[in-house]
Length: 202
Image 1: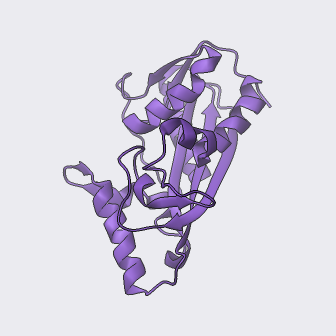
Image 2: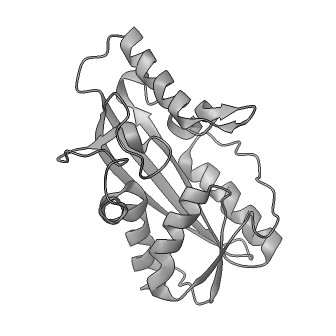
């Protein structure tokens, strides 16, 4: 496994919440992070049907365009009773002509579950795949998952995306209600990140 030896890393994302979360996780390693958006890089089309495939597209594009190592994250929520949807299309479910509307996307998931009369608990899992890519085309992949269930109504204003409706197993607060430090300690992204640190920063 290749080690990260540089001082600067591109976060291949335009999602402010994701950039903030990854930046906080990288802070202890003295790595200077810059977002793809800050470098003026466009968002490449995510044409794959897996988290790993889309993470690779984003990381390799940013590494190639910037000449720096780049870290991408492809993540989403998969709901059991919806055959794993929205899955890799989680962000697409929130797309509107005026930007992403996650409360609308969460309401859509819940109404589909109601339509199907899905039994409780309405099981779901958050998936995150991190890809660290170098300008020479090499990459390393790391995956993390957290299991839980979908709850309604939305709870909490912390986090982002589907956090307010996701109650992780063994917890009484949704990701949206949790203190960010508690979420960072156990989230799907944190699990993938621990593997990344062990593999490439350790």
